[in-house]
Length: 305
Image (cartoon, rainbow, N blue to C red):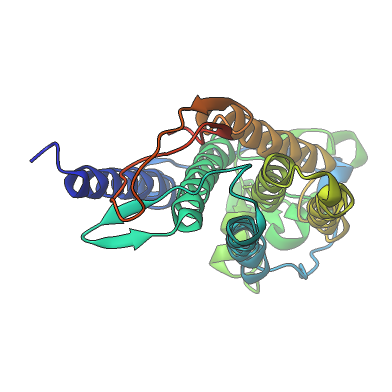
């Protein structure tokens, strides 16, 4: 039973799915229930917290398109073009048989790349969630949205503080702005690092690494460089939006860029082994014989498999 290729392939699919499901469940369901945001205080004289609240023009829908739809579509197009135009002398086609059906090589390659990408994205969300709740850094528009009060009967505010007490550290306070939603009041403590910038930087950095490896042909250098610059520009655009709309501090955005770039580098180099190539032996097989695995002798990325 264990030697059956269909069983091995099905077991592999189930394990990969359960691993991804576990990472995303921990990041999106378990941690929000277990972790409580650190309640950080503030100074009334802190100029970094006096910015007005502005509605961001990048929403979660835009972010989903950027970090899910765009990478999946790009990988699919690249692998389909490679399967159609790469000569067999440069790369021998990989063929899998599952329940009697032949699986094209580009489908297996897309599965590997997108699966590893989603795993890294889950790790990024996991780190963002833990860091945001552990630091509890206040956003630049904190005073405008919260309008905190403290003291006996909540009678003291920053507007009533004399200049000599403006630098006092206020740790116990209540938010009095009834116009702000509960979701916005919860977000006001989650500034570090920038979640939008972290996930966007991870996605774009991963695509830069991936295109560097898969679009290696000489005649594709100009296109590859243009695409890589476009990916970098998209990440910078997200960073600029978070700063210009006062959603995050500059240090939050910088930390998000470093976090996304670091996890993308870790996944591509140490998990996917995207830049490491292995030698595969060439063997002659009858045309109609089913092949479970690789055939041929060539250098190819391993993608962690």
